Image (tube, rainbow over all chains, first blue to last red; front, side):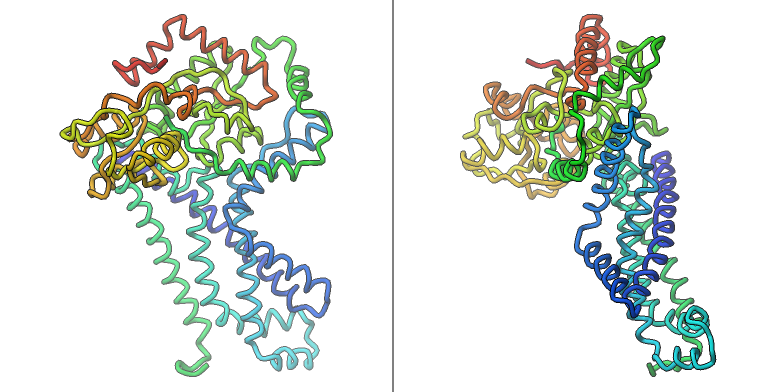
Length: 233
Length: 284
């Protein structure tokens, strides 16, 4: 039993790697998406709209398979047309990080857009009146205030993202869910109820990660709400 | 025999559409393979990437130390020896098996995949390398035969989109049985234990390892031994084969010759006795 538990714990590293990598991609894309949607330029508004609509309208699993298998076929065809034997292989870890980051970037876009809109416009205007650049105003005035508004939605997105990493099982990555499934199948007949035991263990690991993140994010929320009286907005 | 229909073949079609700019006919691919292989190579396939889904004991699973093992895995190794190739095992979840083959993530699927007409539309198969029958499992004390009418009023669980489900829906349901599809065969066993089901329709080797030989399955057995042989062609196909891409005809022929060679040399028999002792895996 112990070797299987240890192997599932190794999956924890893969799950955490995919989740944190995807989070970075999602935050970058989310900020860019929010900026595009709020920008005064029509073209950027469209790009932002198309991104958040198309991505959020298609299931994560479909994106994952479309990019990993469909993308690979496309690469192979291009490489073969150029005379190579087969194209460079899409790395499953990179595919997982990018797909999940890409999808959750769309959700982050909306979270960040709402948070930016919650910071009174007068704050930015005051910055500009002092001659600060747009970026400087964003970094020093809007960003510190929007974090407080963004955190509840951000926390939500992160927890959903964390569990969405289980989808990488489909593209062959040895994450928690994949290894728990394999352990359950392999130990069948040796350990009674193996499938349930290992799946429950996997569930506990996800619960552990989300509990730790909730604790840390609550600390962050307190930190960014220092200037706000509880009970007021 | 594992026989979940690949729900994602639709997706593979979509992926193929993405790549519709392709101009060369598929037949050009093997020619390119031969041209690119070094002339002095001892084998046409120095390395064979074989996909497995290691969740199907005793055919394909991973040992405690994480090594692939099982009947499928040993057959794959023996076939690689015949082809003078090095076997590289690639793990792939069942849902993405055929899309991954088409995307050239690997060259062959040796993972108890049943040869069915539906799958033949997207991939090619060698001849079978094993073929085991299925049976209807119910309480031994009921003393039922294998004929469909015996299961009137019984509630039976089956694996979704499997050949066993096709048989149950096609023959047992019209005869008055209630059929409940499940996502995994293990869930069926859990519901038999909890009393929600009277039994299941499953592969005889699978059900023996997964249920009948465990304490939970002690009071159960295969009704009448196996499902009557006359239903084999209609529902169960020709057994499990090696799946390869349609254009890799040379590889298919080499693998077919390999299967014949390990049958003739007794290697196949040895592997079969090692993993499933006392059962004729080759079938009819």
